[in-house]
Image 1 (cartoon, rainbow, N blue to C red):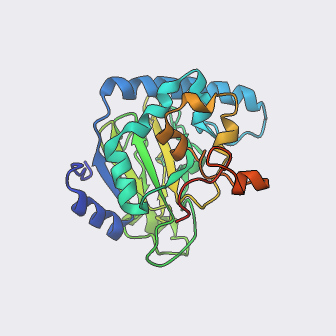
Image 2 (image 1 turned 120 degrees about the vertical axis):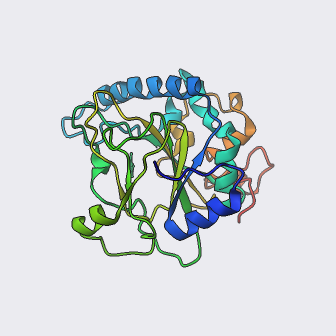
Image 3 (image 1 turned 30 degrees about the vertical axis):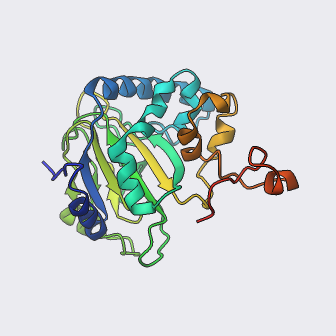
Amino acid sequence: MSSVFSPDKISESLDFYNRNGYVAIKSSFSDEYLSHIREIMIDLIEVEKKEINDENYRDYGFLLCAPHYADKHPEILDVFNNKELLDFVHDVLDKWFIVYLYSNNCIPPHGGNTKAYKPHVDTPRYIPNYHQSIVVMITLDEYTEENGATWVLPASQSIVEKPTDEHFYNSAQRLVVPKGTLCFFDPKVWHAAGTNFSKDWRACLLIVFCRPWMKQRVDIPRFMSHIEKDTLPKHIQQLLGFNSAPPANFNEFYGDEHERTFTQPFV
Ligand SMILES: O=C(O)CCC(=O)C(=O)O
C-alpha cells in the first residue's frame, strides 16, 4: 500500500509533492457518492463513444468534458465542494485557479488498457520553481496491481528526456491506494496507467487545474452552453472558467461587471 497522507498534514503532503512530483491524500467523499459517480462515468463512456461515432476513436475510457453532462448528472460538479481537494490545489496554484480539464480514466477489464498506458508526462512545460497546473486523480475504486494501479516515477518532474521503459518500470512505484484517494500529480512527472487484469472496470476522475490566465484544454463554458449558467453556484462558475473568458468586444472588456467576461484578478 502506498503512503496516503491525512488531509490535516498539509506541510508534510506539500513537501512530499514538491520533492516527488505526486502525493496521495485521503478524502472525505462518501463511499456512496464515489460509487454513484463511478456508475455515471461508466455509462457516459458509452454515450460519448456513440456520439463521436468514429472508427479511429482512440480515447475510449476518457470523457472529453465531464461538466458537459451536468444537465443530466449535476452531481458530477459536487467534487468542487470538496475542501481537501480545493485546499491542496490552492496551496500549489494560489487563488483563482480554474479547471483546465475535467475527465476520467476508466480502464476496461480483462487485460484492458487506455491511451495512458505508456510512460508519459501530461504537460512538458518547464518553468523553474513555478507550478502552472496540477492534476488530481480521484480513485473511484480501490487501486491494486491487478486492476491497473498507476505507475509513477518519483522525483522525475524535472527529467525532460523520456526514461527507458526498463528504467521506468524498475524504478516506478505503483499507487496502490483505497477508493476515494486524491492522487495529485505534477503534470511533468513521468507516469503510466496500468493494465487492468481484473474482471471489472478500474475507474477514476481526472481533473486538471491551471492558472486563470491559461487557455483551458477545452472551452468548458461553451461545452456547457446547453446549461443555464445562473443555475450553477458562483464558485463553480469561477472554477469552470466562466469568469476568465477572453473578451471579444469593447463591452466585454470595458463594460459593467455583468458584461465583462474576465472578471477575476489577473494574477
Ligand atoms: O489512470 C491512470 O492510472 C493514469 C492516467 C494518466 O496517466 C493520464 O490520464 O495521463
